[in-house]
Amino acid sequence: MNATPAQHRIIPMTPAEERELVIRYAIHNSSYGPLLIASSARGILFTGFGEEEQLLGELRDRFPAALITSGEDPLHRHALARIEKPYSEDTLSLHLKGTAFQLAVWEELLQIPCGKTTSYAMLAQKIGHPASSRAVGNAVGRNPIACLIPCHRVLRSDKQMGGYHWGTHVKVKLLEAEAALSFQSTVNNNR
Image: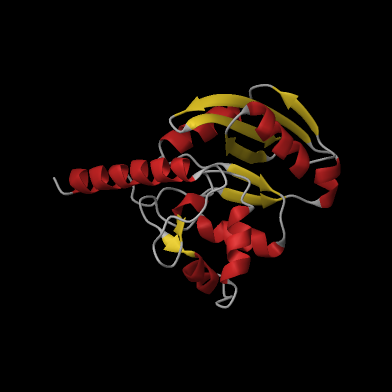
């Protein structure tokens, strides 16, 4: 197991792409609950935990002009596999709509190793905006791709869990699973 898995590739969405966007989505069973995975022709653009109608509403809110259809896409299986095995070497293209600041924060989130955590203040420092912890927190909260962009690895400066869009119970399960995988990796590497 590699301690630092290969990074996903962020593809910023252009306004022209957004106007002509076709999205395919499917609901998958995951270790953390029902998971909606949505993709465009260029990559994964949304993942979220919860009930289908609630998640579809959020998808429509994020992409009001898009044609959204139900159906499997091979990318969905790759995304689910990476969520279930965060140390996997699979890399995915992530087709993201966001501001330059949000994209910078999401890119930095990809640098947090599996089994590790950071704080909003540390993220703000790493992107060169040390006085912007609150803005970083807002960008983290707008992350459209649960797990694959690991916003669950961000804790408050006092090491408290803080919020999580998909529920703190999911955040705790994700962190516990990654900590266990990290420990197992360390044990295997020391044999």
